[in-house]
Figure 1 (spheres, rainbow, N blue to C red):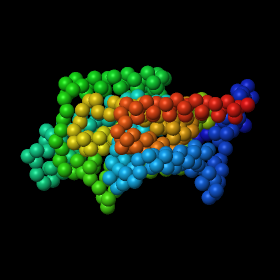
Figure 2: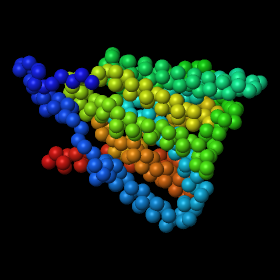
Figure 3: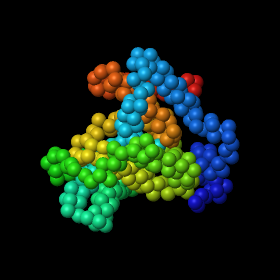
Length: 360
């Protein structure tokens, strides 16, 4: 990475960005065990979430009893969490860069429809290696479409400097229109067993979908915490202008951010179509705002620059506990959405209040 030294700048260009550039060029501090433990705490956000989860489990446990902790209940949570979790990862990576991706659900549905159409058209009647290759090709087609959508989003935002919310809103509308127009709103169903297994099968008692979620979350967490690309994403979210002056190709980084987000949406598409054994243009539409809720609740700054995958995972667990408990109590699903909305308002308000108090 080619980063110009501050001392090499002409005197007349020295300005208020110097401190930001110096911070960006400073070598990363050494991380010990205590610092790693504190790092997991995420400035206390993760510890607060753990306390909230413990309080929720204790409270709902007193009201519902052993049924909340039964094997069937825990298994149900494990099957429901992954698809929302992967979509939340797709949203989180864009929020960290100071952007947003409103097209994650529409992207997932179009990818699922493309994969579903390929599977239902060519798999019946095929045998042997062709049977396997068609399924691989169907998945590859879905991921190729996701990559194309991600590159379009990234190019519009990074190179044409269009606001992320406007760019992805336009992409969402375009992609959903294509999905509804090509299928007339119909459902495509009936997939081969290996595909259905991804959403409904288990390996050593662990739901396959949960393993897929872990396989998506772990590399993303490592990339954000350890790789230069992850550091660049955080820096752009904190101050894009200072990051650009430090020598980082911010446009390329933003392009990669939206590519990663769309590919994660394609992973979510595989899990959704496998769990429902069908695909439709309107599946998961209620997830869009919940992905933002999960990210913000997990400590991700909606303005960018701060947040961890571990916090997002804890937030998802908390939301899933509330949803499952309300389901066991036979409360309306709309009441669950209302509670989630109230949580989002409370968290956003508390975050702003805490920042004002810190600022004196």
